[in-house]
Length: 292
Image 1 (cartoon, rainbow, N blue to C red):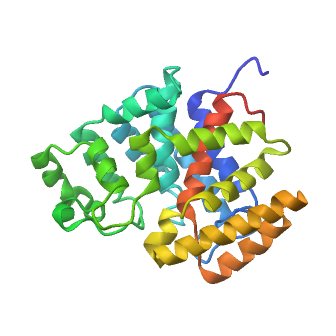
Image 2 (tube, helix red, strand yellow; image 1 turned 60 degrees about the vertical axis):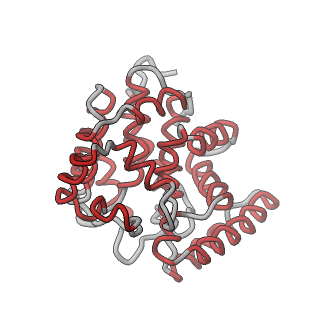
């Protein structure tokens, strides 16, 4: 063990770097493949750019403020949105770790304690990058996150906290549920379970990250795929991931996942929400002793 262990903020930045370097993660940028509009090096730059906001989170800054600063720093590369969803998960995790309380209950309470100001900062973060989100319920049109700062008066009028925003996104009326928002509301169960699986796995960390991605994608339809392609496509992607995971576990090789990665890139399938949770899981695993 190092005499100078990494800080939670440093582990947050490292988790972002390990996530994008894990290969293959079918449909996502990794060290072997770029997408038409996003490149591997842009994710590396986004990871480094987010560091100041992650330090703020670890130092106890309000979650919305720390998140917006992380997103603003992440956006300072030429690709646009590289890690918005990752940072949405990492900010409360890093915040909890900063005071030595990285448990599901502690993280959930930090999320639950957010304010209207946190929600306003979250909405302002949408002005730094373009983010693919689903349409809000008709009753919440004034709270459409794509409105950015223009939605802040409605937030303040309604007294809507960032927790409230996540509750609405996790279980929208007639819309696509956002599993990242569900993590906030439910205490990050998927993230913590995935972290335990990474710790129980063996071999290079980047291979563990790739297997973690495949396991999570095989378990639950990806929100970004459902938002951009529809729920039936998202379910088909989940089924293909499950079949590929079975082949990986049977052969002990990630080659079947490489084949799926090529297919998803060719089809324009990008399970980005699942990748977000891999970053969160890697952070928790690093905080719990994962060696790199």
